[in-house]
Image 1 (cartoon, rainbow, N blue to C red):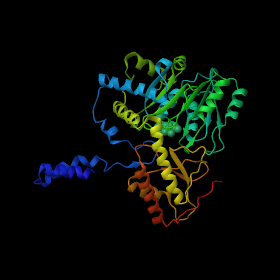
Image 2: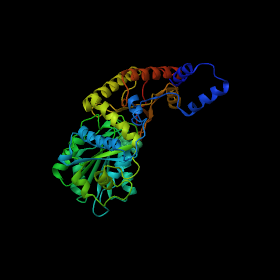
Image 3: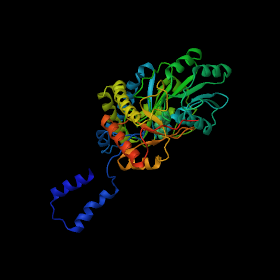
Image 4: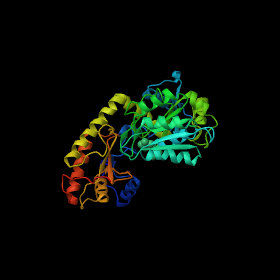
Length: 411
Ligand SMILES: *Cc1c(COP(=O)(O)O)cnc(C)c1O
């Protein structure tokens, strides 16, 4: 594409350039990447051209247009979550990747002796919460699933809460991106709150929000980021907070930059971020929210992702690959496939060959088995799924892998 732009500019400028003019003309292009890749990954993910183009302006942090954008983004996100300011909710954006916002919420758990966090983990992101708690010296306990194939069990959660009355906070992942599993957030939050209404319930809905419905009825914090299902560019994340809980946590934060209460108070006081805002990422997100609405909100977006997933699943099944997860917990955001049982299979070769064709996939993250992951989210459509499948098949044949494959069974 870049070459086309260059050559059309060329024609307009006339072809009688000297060699020196020509080389100085070409110079700036050296640092520009050749073309967009399609990212079959759960973040960073493929963004629309309009979202990227929206960023081609510079706005000052106090510019009234920018202040309006912050407002749009905050209220737009509450709308996606199905809550309002008057119902006692607020959206607090935080600079950084998704983990920054998760950490800003986890970091509000009261100090040791006054608060204890119960973390439900069935993958890398649950483990990351535990790591955050360790860094902040937050008293915590983790319920770990036997492997990434299982989801947190409500009975075990209630049993743990029954045995340990010092637990004040519970946190869990909505969609575990490690495996692609959809965790029963609504059911667990409802059962926990029914028995322990004082518990603060935290949900990392990073790759779930905007795609899967989630009830805010029994939760207090819902965290996601700019670059997941809403399809903005990376740069900030946000927590949708029950205001009462947020304000009660004032003074608990262990980090100045990640103090979510201070961030909220700053935004409320003068509508500005405390520190340099990710202006371009917010402008892009404002556009991404418009596209999200135009597609039909959560339902419309999920329909496209679900279709992408179905196309991938069918194509992979024809090559002998079946999703690692059982159907009842498999979401439509990312799919884990185990490696084929074939001596000619070489993941590095596959990865590089796909990349050369402009296709980026993810290696697996499972603790017990070798696997790869293909995402179906971002600005991707059926044609992209088919292109990915074609390339995948061609590379498998090039490697000499016999199709259909049989997959390596996990231990
Ligand atoms: C992407 C993601 C995060 C945040 O990861 P970052 O790399 O910090 O953006 C957290 N939790 C889940 C479930 C995710 O999918």
